[in-house]
Length: 204
Image (cartoon, rainbow, N blue to C red; front, side, top):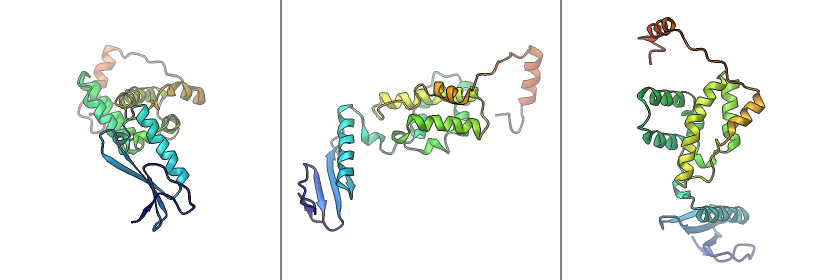
């Protein structure tokens, strides 16, 4: 495929850029953080250069764009949980259950680099409105997602944590309040545990 230092409009291309007259595509070649040669393509020069600028910003900020390219939230969360061997067995199981139930098959499949603050906010609102989850359950999920995103920031996979301070806005928009929690009496605890033991649904 023949490449030119000018495009079909006579515009001079920058270093790393080329134009293919056969398919009308622009290409930009660059080396990632590991030195591996990578390429991006576009049929629009302006779009290509916007992506070039993003790559440059990522390099200057130490963001590993190659790592983040295909990494999903599920990948990030599973890696985060692999580091949490300090959690009690029951707490670990609770985190995994909540994540698998509400996150993994939905927003968990999205690439972490594409998840924005507004996405997390809308995700929480949808859980409250459509799945009828309480604000307390959303707080529980936030305790899982926020540190997972934060690990991705520290690993230089993303620039900022999209879950940062999202609960404040959620409360403001929904008027949600944490319910009052009343501790069970010893006899109530015993009856509750007897009911749960071996139950086909709740026994997990």
